[in-house]
Length: 192
Image (cartoon, rainbow, N blue to C red; front, side, top):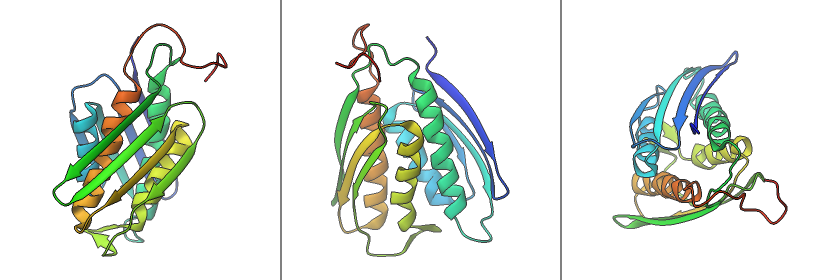
């Protein structure tokens, strides 16, 4: 079974294409026009060991909101499609990732229920050209379309480190939740 997906989405504000493979080797080719966002998406792919291509253009002359939101929507949709029928997956995954003084943790359930619990604060409004408010909004957009439950939090002193630790923790936790452990659907309901 190929656990890959390619999804495109074009609106009046953005044009986004995402290719995603759960069973990759951490190769990323990311171009959104937002340098720091590219950096943390690349970290997500590398530490999750996913293959990821993101090509996005958006109305950055307005701000980065629509581009980051729509990448979250499309990446979430690609993650959901790559799950396939979910038979044999671990279902749950967690990770606790340090980055210098910062530490982040993520816990995931790929149950088909969308829910986000997010806890992190930043000292500055921007890292590079990315508004730090968009970190939570990205994860909300992603989990809504990936149909996953995600509890994610971080603390630290350096906003770059906090953001990067969050994305690395998410990648590692997602990888752990999608490992094939057998042939049964991990649900007492019989559906996910």
